[in-house]
Length: 324
Image 1 (spheres, rainbow, N blue to C red):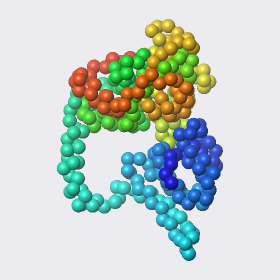
Image 2 (image 1 turned 90 degrees about the vertical axis):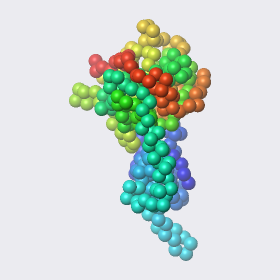
Image 3 (image 1 turned 135 degrees about the vertical axis):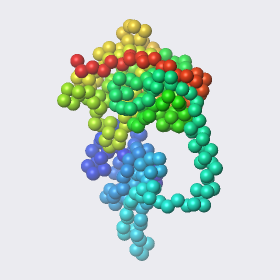
Image 4 (image 1 turned 120 degrees about the vertical axis):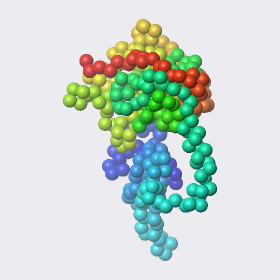
């Protein structure tokens, strides 16, 4: 059986993420303890263990690991299961396949390393991903700019992947795919001020205070790293006060210079994963869909760069994150 990830701790079965239906592996284990093997994915975790009678595997992502389950039978009855992960880098290449794919690989590398644009000020490179979130890096403004142009929405929200590079002075397609790593498309929803504030409050959970300093909430690194679940918006100006209790951290929210009211209406463009409620953003599921743009965001970014060639991105600091 192949399913997604786990919503509960596999030792205690205590919940560690909201049960949104996105991950139901623990529910399956609890409901069907007679399952012999459970092969999972989605969360990019490295799991090789027995849970009760069941051998459980999850081999990370990007083909780094291979999952293998050894099953021993006696008189037609399963008597032992051994799940294990094998590091793909330790495997010996099949030279015949390597030779067969060499031309394709060479072509792909030339394609990925083709220059498509330039950053004259060399200011779209990310050397500290957390600071890029804390102070809204220009690359965030760039992605939102691409989304707004493609969608004609009033507001845009995007996140940064867990490990992002940004752009060097010479931009290649490889840079784009290393900066926006997921095959997401765009969804435009209609959202009111009340639900917009709810979404911002959810994003504000990303930050905590430790020894008086702002850092990220540990829950975004366990059971899996998910910094990509913190979104940054353009089209509005807002303040997150990290010292306030959860649910009351958005102390200012303005559109076009005035405070947003609960019944104000906006169109918001965001990726299809988030629009579906992914990352525990259930408020988006209630919002009507205005339109969907079935083009990968990375492709939209690439075409934008090709059209403009030179990227001079403004440093729009519309997100204020404070302690008091």
